[in-house]
Image 1 (cartoon, rainbow, N blue to C red):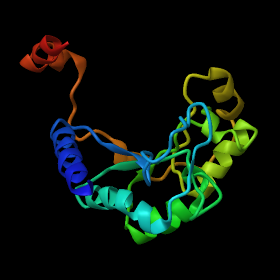
Image 2 (image 1 turned 60 degrees about the horizontal axis):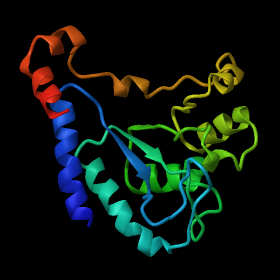
Image 3 (image 1 turned 45 degrees about the vertical axis):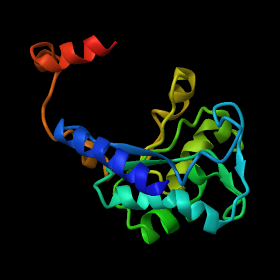
Length: 187
């Protein structure tokens, strides 16, 4: 239900912005219609573009409510493109940015996940994700892979400043107000 998603996620965006934080919507264009886990495999969603548009409506609505960043899915939407969305300029540049008007930051999903392994080397994965429209390439929990790419000559992320927090809010402030106690009481 796109309306419910936009209402609930819109409230989350508003609350995060109020607290000085930015918000990332994921996984574009939608990850809920595949059984496989992209951490372990490369899922394929065989729905038509008309069916996928229902998922896209949520992103469209949230872009209108100030969504700061988007993370595309490591899922192939086979009726639209033969590449996973995070490696697809059709999904990122044509649909997300041009058609939906998204001008925020695009983070890749973790490039060490199995869903990204259709491109063999980590350097190539980073390059293809950036060429496809991602602004920032993520490599999580694998320092040996980070070591292979960290010192290479990558283009500067021109949009990174968009992710800067709105308000300075540090642990010392949190420790001296009721927010921390309220959160701890929920745990």
